[in-house]
Length: 328
Image (cartoon, rainbow, N blue to C red; front, side, top):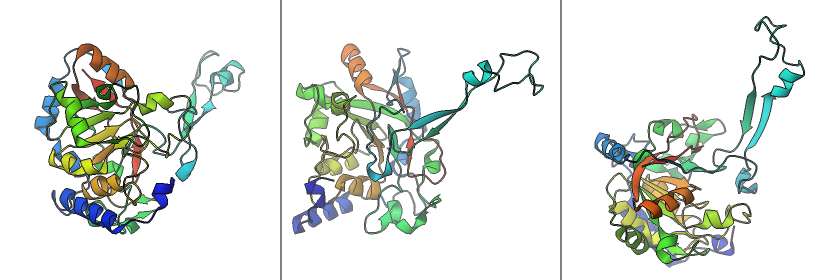
């Protein structure tokens, strides 16, 4: 953590975060039993509209590769994915996998491979779930942190959003809007920045949209990650929270490790998560690779698309890897 993350909050910090919590809370909005938060904003009308945006037959990948070349450092127990083979082609070639002897094949050379992957659920491109962050011992919709044990979460876990992750997506390419390859670490993206980037392309945010915010920071650090995972970074300002809430955005997706600007703007760790994830129930997408999408949007001038980023229904999990696509 940075020095700012460790500092004690001031009275002003306390006032600020509590004001934003009160202004942006969705606790009870969709009922006391709700466990999907702002994905409630994406219904049949929004899905139909999103599907209507697929006009060119393009599928643009938005997920980082899940491999040992990722940005994780081991902080918070997060390491890069580990893949190993439990059955290989070498086994077939050397006769170690002999389906003839097992009576499963009439001739040698027939076989198969299997692989095992070991990874934290938040090792790469991923959705934060509503059981991921706590404030005063509570998570989204006033559920206690004690609902989460070593075997998983009793509430707000990823299986409840297994049919979510599809929406109209709009790209706010803040880096291009500012005329830079990448925003600098510590740059706080304001609501004015987001509106300016969208307005410049003739795009309006609609209720139930997924807002994708490109900082360029992932591309700037790709292959030489340094402290990309957890260090200083550009990101969305805490003070943009009321605007995001008023717009009824269903999901906020950024190409950084933690969505919000770091060092954090006030003396609370990841305060935007506290306001928008814990209290707003907002879906947060982290480490989405927005480079190919941004290049394509710059070429064809189309900054709206169908986002297809389904959750893996890992029962009890607080986050999930995702194979995300933008369809145009």
